[in-house]
Image (cartoon, rainbow, N blue to C red; front, side, top):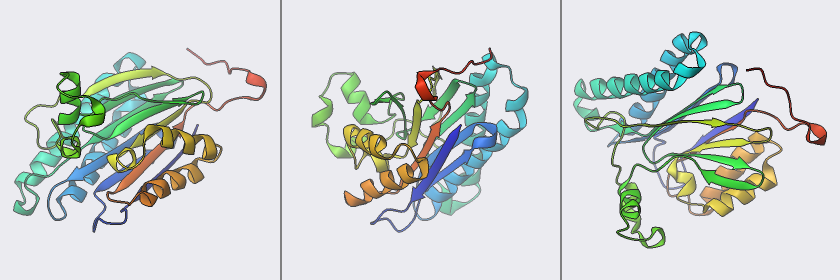
Length: 253
């Protein structure tokens, strides 16, 4: 397994409200993009990530493969409760919330838990595919065929339909992916995909994918070169490295 992560304030924002954590030793990867006035967004994103990570560290090692998805849902719920309770106890933090992406790796399987408009992508054999659905009004409008994706006003992309810490009830997107040698998972805040088209992200992966640290730098730099209007964060994970000659490794069941 290889991984890398990077979070950057961007060129226009005063604060970085994103928070990322890459725990390669335990196969746990998290990203959050906070929202709220003053320091609230920063508090929400860090609290959500650290709360979810602590629960996963405690229970994931003893969790059966078929129960990992349930554990991720519990980690999300714990993060949701922690952010909401913290806001209730501090007037300056009221209304804070965050997106949250959780990825747990078990061998060649990745279990994903998603809320908000941050994204998880899978890059496989030269193709980039978004594997999570955006929880925003833009996605609702497209799903209901109210408008085509290329004609959505940008303001609707930033209005979330659910977020950790503020929604009355969360309905997370939870799914698993069977990974192949050479696959790359990209977890990112909307500062990346809001600045770069998917084809541009794919091109940067093709050019820099041999070194994940260089790739993380290239993706953040690419977003900033487009104006750096938002915080931008990426977590990159290559679960199963490709082997020479196209030979596939033998994976234990």
